Amino acid sequence: MEHISLITTGFMIVIGVLVGLWAVCSLVALGFKEKPKPPKPETPLTEGIPAHHVAAITAAIAAIMSEGHRIVKIDAPPHVANGWGESNFIQQTFAHRIRWDWKIPGPPHVNHKPKEIKGK
Picture 1 (spheres, rainbow, N blue to C red):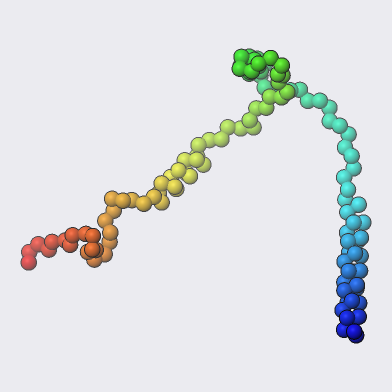
Picture 2: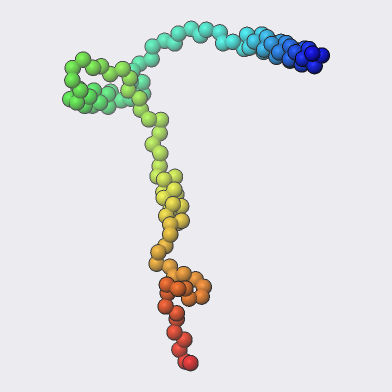
């Protein structure tokens, strides 16, 4: 019975310390809580896109979609990636392919005819 009371006391101490750590962490987290930000003003739907591009996109969508749709936003990609990275990837991939036309190095194998030695 003496061992059970010792184990129970140790368990309660561990639980108490963990609860105390949890409380301290919660109090510290209150200091880092974000303050509410004021709402942003509405940005134009087509910021930075030329008007003739917007007209072409709108006409294409109107021709494809049925009535009842509206354009919410048009985004232009930030940049066009060049092909250098893709080209390097392809070169690396095909550099490691198995070349079936290579001969097996070393002594003659079971599935290969031995080479003929000329002059003997």
